[in-house]
Image (cartoon, rainbow, N blue to C red; front, side, top):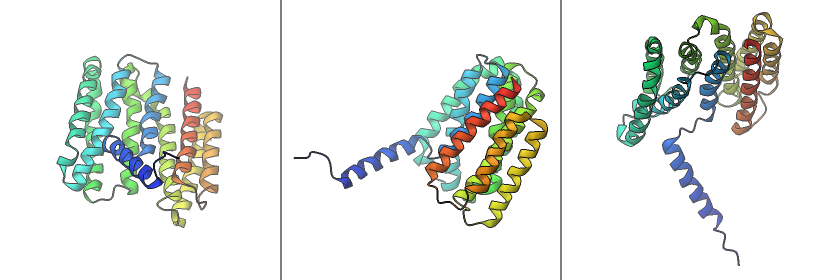
Length: 257
């Protein structure tokens, strides 16, 4: 006699487990690549310094704090996420302290982050988090960490402009491409915008960033041209972008090291 729980019970248990995870971790899987790609690429180019380690923790904790803070802006219900705000806010403050003590110049980026966070808050207040400009503000926050990593390493930030440009070109393209696959899958305008953008990014990559980076952007152009219109599940779209981010990472690090 089988002792396996019925399908309905298994589904209920799985739902509770997902709910607990989502209570503490945002259901935005693509955000992790957007957070880690600029950081990891910059660290590999500059070389690892000890403040980079608490910087990574502070960077991730700040993202988690901001996610729940924006939920408060959107819903006006701070009581629902107060534990998350306290945990992630305290973690970010604790972890960033040794970074600031070692490299006080990192504080110079605070006004830019505050401005971009204000853009996110404005869109959250209007419940338009998926707006293109809001996504681009999030990309800008992620790319800015390239220069933070350079400052922590004692490397002139201007020396990583090319790295930041290549990473930004990929992330902006990802925003457009993913919209054509999910939320704007029926929009012909978005498809053409995505294709035109990826073609322009390929031209820039070929002219400025070397053959390896250009080859990756050629593949990204192909996926932007061929995949929209196909009914891929979001998880498959995410896997394609995971491969794309790894290719960009390898090509950019290889070119600048």
